[in-house]
Length: 104
Image (tube, rainbow, N blue to C red):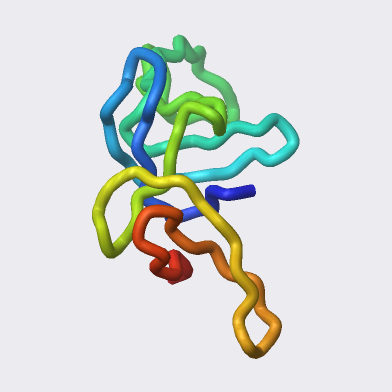
């Protein structure tokens, strides 16, 4: 997947278009990601044995992977991702705009 946990992404489609946030969780089986502060939903919960919070809870819902783009650390804008092999044989993600390596 081109997006990993703790990446900074920008939403490019949907009701939250233009918002930026950090990837909280990646769901590769469903091709979805959970981004902090994006696609907030209200969940009505009843009290239970495990749940301590009840009432209307606002939380993030998964958003489709095709609706987000990673943000490059160097050029600070949403960009496409390419892959490159280094001399030691490791595969890294690179920014298609500036060519900068996007690994942490």
